[in-house]
Image (cartoon, rainbow, N blue to C red):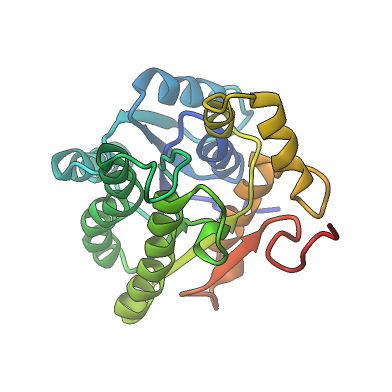
Length: 261
């Protein structure tokens, strides 16, 4: 039985941990050669080392990238082509966030969130898409959030950035449908990742903050990075060839209905 991404070449940003790492591992297990891009090169290399433990997985490589930086984003694409000969899939997963309202979010944090979460997708995509055009098409999967769909208290800058990701996904899909390039996004709810753990740690009572995160999930738990990776795999794979400009929500029922008070 053939693997779902057999002979494909993929870039995954933010591949050093969480959703990005699980996506890179799953892609490799399904036959893709993977470039694990991350600002933390050591973490990206750890992902590559884990891929190396998967029996029959193609080769993988790590690349240090600040996705908001044009030279880095271009270098990521060029490194991928030089290393693996082509580019079929781009997963724009790298992201940051901090709690805050418009009154409590610093200008520095606002700019950083917008730079990584939105500009990062712009930078990586504008260098990847011409290569995909050369090779006859491809698939791009962006990581948005339920914060793009419904208001989440104390996440003003993060929600604004993920709303932009959702809108950008649709715009890119419309612009490049004739290039045989599909562009979709996932909208995760709260996922149990190291990034969420670090954010929870910023609260005065981290245990209470985590309890509240779990309590607001109708399904009764946080999401798993592996579950998000499976959704990304679907959108990147030929199984989703009729999907473009879509947003796949994975939130344990958060946006579908309200828990009884």
